[in-house]
Amino acid sequence: MTQVKETTISNRKATWLPKAPGISWAALGFLWVIFAFNGAGRELLNRVSPLIVSEYGITASTWGNIASLIAIATGFLAIIGGIWSDKIGRGWARKKSNIWVILGYTIFLLVIGISFISVSIGLFVLFYVLRNAASGVGESIEVASMAEWWPAESRGFALGVHHTAYPWGTLLSGFLVTGILLATNNDWRMIFLILPPLVIPVLIGYWFFATPNRFRNYERKTIEMGLTPTVNEEYEEIQQADKKGAFKAILKNPNVMVVTFISFLAMAGYIGIGFWLTPYLTYVAEFDIAKAATYSVIFTITGGIGQIVWGSLSDKFGRKASLLFNFAWLTVGFLLLPFTANGLLWLVLIQLFIGLSTNAVYPVLYAYVSDSAKKGYMSTALGIQLTGLFLGGLSPMFLGYFINLGGGWESHSGYQVGIYILAGFMALAFLMTLLFTHETVGKKRGKDFALVSYESCGIEKNK
Image (cartoon, rainbow, N blue to C red):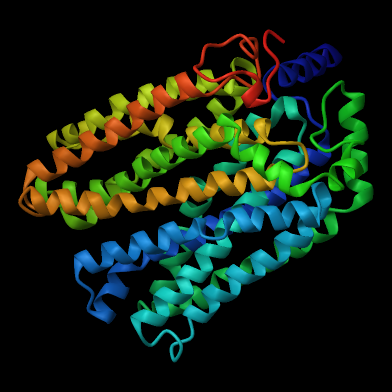
């Protein structure tokens, strides 16, 4: 009886968990925590913004411009950093580029916490821009590392779980921020001095974990399981390939360049929600400001769930199919957002609804580009994508413009125009995905419709 039960449980696990060596799961643990610290560093700006605005005496419009500048800075060096990381090495060897980037964005945050350095808003912005520029490079390396430590057949699942570090990992960091503020009488600089260095022990652990022998063991076990390692025996040949030719090939690939533009639209919508929702609930729906700030992040609860679910489904049903569903879902979700003013029940249900797709698109977009990148240049392709993605940080600028044009913070019309534009972005992303990209995995690979050729996307027709 006991033996039968154990076998049943084992088989049941195998039906919903993807096949992967144990080493892959260990790598996922290390890289999840590292990415959580990366994302938390970006979110610190939002966590302490009232204290910073008060200290420096910043107006709302000026703060919006600063927030956009810091957000788009995340993509400033992503392409250069991606090329650099690919050149230094893939698989286990990516730790050689990643360690310098992580130390860089950690040090820049620490510097912000030193009072005589961040004495002016100019120096504060400078170091945050530098921090986020390093952070964008770090993300391209961290996503590429995650893809390379997992079998290609489970790439969407791995990237989906990995990317939950942003909504859920940064949510956990929020509790630490609250504790530090309570313990230091709202000294926001102490957050920058205490929180960033906590990543160092994890970084040391990953450095000793990511070794050539362990990576070869992962590759061997992956092949024994009948799966495909992302990095394989072609590695040495790839490292000697023509870098310039490879970069041009990436720029000509619609599955990379069109997805880069789609990533811009997706991020403009995501950052737009963060800028739009809290003041809408405060000034139009007339929620208490503290409650508005709390209720405006409900969508992150289902955001992490959506990443895992749709990352996994994209492995089976295809990246393109998953993106089409999610951008259609988001179009409806954005159109529903103005109804959050109708009461708490509407607010919760609509946010939980839209949250199922707000974060879900990112691991699928990353997997789409990773699938389509020329072998040996995954981080380069991801760097290009992240440059486009973080240009979406411009959305607070034009949303603020339309809110002001519509009569200011208390006027409903400006918010309405802004949210219609964001819904239009999601609809445009749907059309761009449908018409200008080709499926990379699943039964529709080589059989789907698009206005671009299969060859331009590096895909054989009807394969």
